[in-house]
Amino acid sequence: MPRTTRPTVVVTAGLAALLLAGLAGCSGGSGSDGSEGSDRGFAGALPGRAPAAATPTPTPTPPSGPYVALGDSYTAGPKIDPQVGEPGGCGRSGVNYPSLVAKALALAPGQFRDVSCSGARTGDLKTAQKTDDGSNPAQLDALTPDTRLVTLGIGGNDAGFMQVVTECARDTLVGAVKDLVGEQTSAAPCREHYASGGSDQLQARVDEAGGKVADVLREIRRRSPQARVYVVGYPALLPADPVSCRPVLGTTVAAADLGFLAEKEQQLNGMLKQRAEAAGAVFVDTAGPSAGHDMCAGEGSRWIEPPFPAHGLTPVHPNAGGEEAVAGVVLKAVRG
Image (cartoon, rainbow, N blue to C red; front, side, top):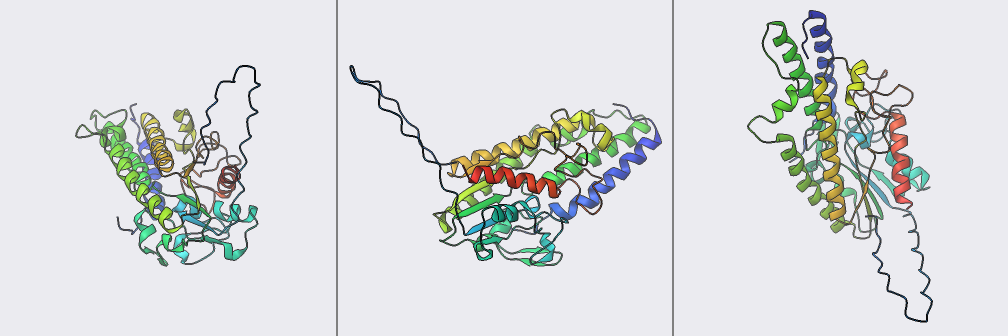
């Protein structure tokens, strides 16, 4: 799609600069690197006998704690008031989804630990994570043999998803400048960027992150063998028709690349689901329930803030309503 006027470049540059500055603080980390059930067979009825009545599957009792919440900024809730806990650099909110889940389960303060931290990667679960304001101890150290409930929201930073959003904005800006001087540009510069060399670089990143998530799940099981583990996916950033985001995003990202970003988030969530199920954990899908509440929805209904967020909130991250909504989805899974 040609971009031939200087005002377009100015708008694109402004949005891209916001992404470059606003997302960097929440995506970088300093780290190192199913619902349980049974398959029932149904034997044929013996001649002359009525078939035996099926025994209803009992509903599992929700765990009463201790509960440990592990994760990155989508779990922590940066800039959502009130900010609580140490270190302050983790951006942990007192009304993020783990806190709301613990409250709904009526857990005593000593029965709940939220050790999530903005910018966390899987390596930061195993070793201390440095932040702009203090160091967050290795998140896995919060687990004990007595832990009965664990939620895990991780993987996006390992796959570099926020950097991908920033790169797409940058590629669009470069394309706009090239259009001005008459150079031919791609309709999907970001997709082309990550496909250079003939391979899907982002799929490779997601696959690599999957191995790390699997290692974390094994370690959770080793440290807390009696815990129910829930892997919480990422809510949808974009609507089913990403082009409908143009009024919100303007020309920050090329129209064709909006679909590319949505596709990559689906791959990330697909990986998390696969790894959770392979480890005997429960995957909590938040992308489906968040349909219609993406960052391009109206201010009163969106769960995710757009690049120009509401005052004081973090771009392309959940707001208080999003954390509350995700808490509801997690609670539904926990309560069976």
